[in-house]
Image 1 (cartoon, rainbow, N blue to C red):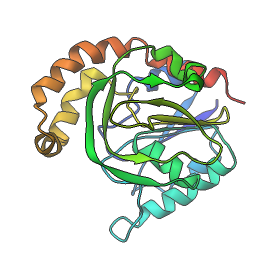
Image 2: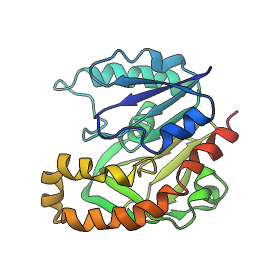
Image 3: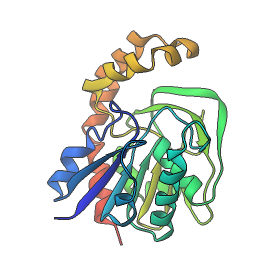
Image 4: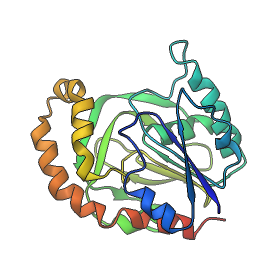
Length: 229
């Protein structure tokens, strides 16, 4: 059985909707907890998914383990092994490929659709159509050399990139299970307050937009797996 190594930075930002789809496609899941588990299994796994979290993709003395994590991810992406990055995971992928990751100066939090580029319309993202996906970030990745820009929003012009068929970075959260949104609201209450976003408004959007997107988002996994080299 092939193994998908899942690098998880915080407990509530898990594989969500994507876990049953990967298992249905025959993958066993090995979850690594960032800062706790050694990241070495990430390097040579059949598949890797690097998930989100509240930290920036900037290793420093406060979180020395992130440098080790980034080094393992760099070895993986330079070898073009199949890797999906989500939010912080996409930022780490971009950094591992030599691109910058910088604060936007504004938070993008909530449900909103993507605008796909021509390349995005011919990518796994096409299964999302106009579905409103969950955004929750304040940083923006630059495009790695040779990467294709796949999507944007009015707040963030770099929402997704692809480098060859195997490397896919997503700034948004298609994996987020709307049934678990309360965990996000509790954990990020201070951030929501600072951004002037009422938790009840986001909760209501999860029950409508989130549920609608959950019907199509797992298909992104299928579309990506189907075109791997």
